[in-house]
Length: 237
Image (tube, rainbow, N blue to C red; front, side):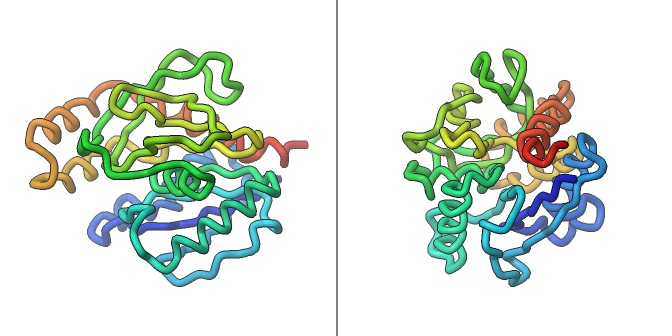
């Protein structure tokens, strides 16, 4: 039976948490849609939980956050050390949004706020053929970010890309680390919340276009299933 440790790095705003749940709640729903028997453990950095020794974990998923990986927060450096240890041990590990960026930075990549501004709403990414993890030619997923991986680490292969986000999905050379910029754990209702939160922060046309885009089909189940299989394949019988 698979056992996945979700490292919560940010909080859903309180006014939205009752309806939509926490980020770990969203990921748990995503994981159980593919593997109903998975065991989920949660380590919440915002709630003061200490990071466990990654060498004792079966699989790791690092969530999104409002923070930037370059912010001078006292928990970021220890989390980068945690990532490097897990990577060296070849512990299955996935990062999403902030997690995608933090893993890249911990392993030698460059992350910064993009001059392209806010990426919100439904984004379509091209899929690298025969990457071994995500099938198909393109995938549509909700995004919510300003920061981007500008230069991936040397050991990372870009497997998802778009004009807006050239390095939206990275598969690492150790074979057990996968990261993505968009949010397969977001349903359409919460993706709309993310658009609402950008009112007055992103240009009006960006928010309007993003809201309208969410009426188009999304591939959450496809990417969420691929991520879950990636995390649990070592635990499979």
